[in-house]
Image 1 (tube, helix red, strand yellow):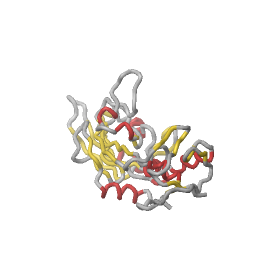
Image 2 (image 1 turned 30 degrees about the vertical axis):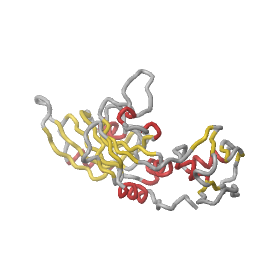
Image 3 (image 1 turned 90 degrees about the vertical axis):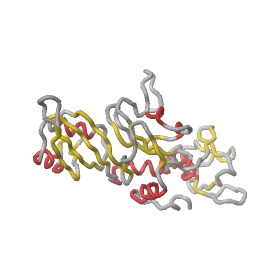
Length: 258
């Protein structure tokens, strides 16, 4: 089905919803088949429906939604900020770090309140969904400072796999170095790459190795690097970084428009 429209470039309705930041394309398909989406006042349930952005009114649950210009931000999240829009206890959230218009973006995954480092924000629902889906195995690189002396045996255990309550977790490209601890307490820095993004995965892996975490920083997410950002600051991703993010999850610029 194609909704009759003035001349213009028509896109699939689920792509429209993704560009509006409402849902990934797959989640958008569910909204459509559930009868929660209307076009120009008419409920549509067919997945082949196309619309022309800017020329038709699309609503979800009766509320108009519009796709804005795609935007991607990289933020250096400091410790002590929650990865949520609002907190009922008044604690600081990552959205207080964003520029004007940032409230319309959603965070790609989470960092717990103690963890620092790279956090991505976007209104491109489909790419965000794929980046987080474990089947795409998008690499995340971390630096973790732990109390205790770590070396080759710990690196091998991380690479071989550490048993957690939700299954075995394996790290890639593990590098360990000794650093100066507080007082007489030895300390080590471990760089490692993960590809699943489970909740508190790095911290739980260190707990399994009896290595208390003193600091945890995410250094990269896929092709995007933290380098160059200061704590609490943000920047727009470059077009090259956005292209690279799409490529790492198997999308081209035209995907989803036909």
